[in-house]
Image 1 (cartoon, rainbow, N blue to C red):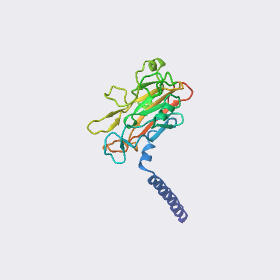
Image 2: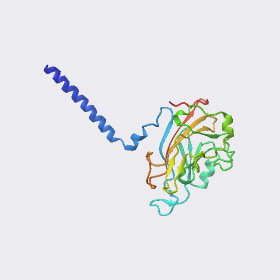
Image 3: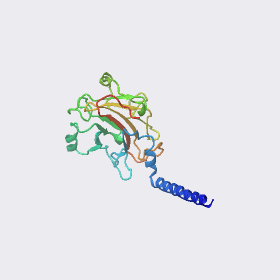
Image 4: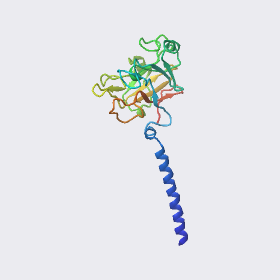
Length: 243
């Protein structure tokens, strides 16, 4: 009988130690790291958390630690997550008319996003070598987009950029409140992409505020810190299933 009691005490101590270790691990994680791990990772997609845009620029004057000036554009390569800054004319001349980038994050808070295309006037890559790229907005959740539209749909698309949605029916990824000056992403908007190399991808733009908060009430919340995810089908097919 005493042996059974000793065994029970030993098992209890082992279980208690495991609980303590688990609690320490959880409390050592930052709050935003825990929230990041929930819901976005699917084992196939690339998830980019808090990619810092031009955090030193400001639309208005008198913002502490910032300059009132246009936001610098940066380019992004989906393959290796390379971020290329265009702070000078020389940098723009070096990079824009190339196939070294896929997405350009431009305008206020780097919130207007272009897909590299050398044939479309107004595109940052206009005059460059990239052709036949296109964007199609799908009013579906990211998880439910399992294939891309036909090439005819891509060819007919008139979407030049993904930015602010002036009205809900427009292809923008967020709405902006003139009363609160806060940007809120639209749910269930996924963008199918035909990339410069001819492969297909899907893209979801999730947040522009640091830490990917579920709700923002403070217009001075740190921004732009972009959270987004994408999946590129490397075999060239239109299969975009990620779950």
